[in-house]
Structure formats: structure tokens, C-alpha cells
Length: 196
Image (cartoon, rainbow, N blue to C red):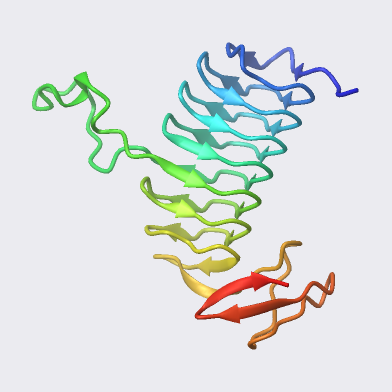
């Protein structure tokens, strides 16, 4: 039997689509129309906007804002103060020169973080990017293009630095790397990591 949803007394949850076992901590705000799966952890001072989609078993650490158009698949980890965007050319819709730009959602550029990926503390993911399954984005990195599955990226802009195991450990270089932490084995084919 799954635990009931927990909403801290100093959090705001306006969504009717929050799964069982999810915990929403103090000063977090989940807006109406946001979708949050089962057994998630939404940390203090996090914000989940209407239209954001969060899968099952996701960890969102403190100080993260997840905007409309951002989708986090199951078991994603989002480190403290990680940043998402959803507009490549943002302006205040209240400005005198914006015109009709914000009358529709044509400006919205989606972002997808695939199953099991890790986003390190203070990283930035520019909208339009897809972070692949079980990829690792290093703390402080700035992602401006797609990150392949199992890749470790770091820097500004983020560049490939190696490969990550399903367990999160960095893999040794070679055509048939074996994880030093858990022993899982992989094969590297055309610069794509394949679990064996």
C-alpha cells in the first residue's frame, strides 16, 4: 500500500494530479494543471508551473522552478537551484513592443529530461534540449543542445566528458567498459553506450 501524498503546511499544492506517496515540502508551490507522479520529492522553495509534467519517482531539490513545457520522465534527479527555461526570446508580455507574441503559446519551446537522468546543482538547461536516459549533467553546466543517453557533460557550454553507468558512476574509457562501483558491463558502438 502506497503512502498518501504529503503536503507540508507551509507549501501550496493547487494541482489535483499529484500521485500517491509524493512529498511537497515547505514553501514549495505546485500550480493547478501541473502533473506530478507517484513517490516524488519536491524540495523546499521549488515551483512547478501549470503545464509542467513530472513522472514517477522524481527528486526535485530545493530552489528549482519547473516551467510549463518542461517534462521530467520517471526517476529523474534535479539538483538544487537547477534552472529550466521555456522561451528562447523572452520579453515581458507587459512591455510596449511585444505586440501579440504572447496571445498564443507559439513562443513555448519544450524541454525533455528522459528517464533516470541527473541534473547537477546550479546547471542550466536551455529550452528545446533533450537530456537522454541516465545522462549526467555536471553541477554548473549549461546545456544548449541535446545530451545523448548515458553521457556525462560539463562546462559552459556543456561538452561530453565521458559516460555514466545506470548507477551514476563514471565509466572507464574503452570499447567494453565495466562499472567499478556495481559491475554492470557496457559496449560502446559508434559513440553510443549500450548496456549488456
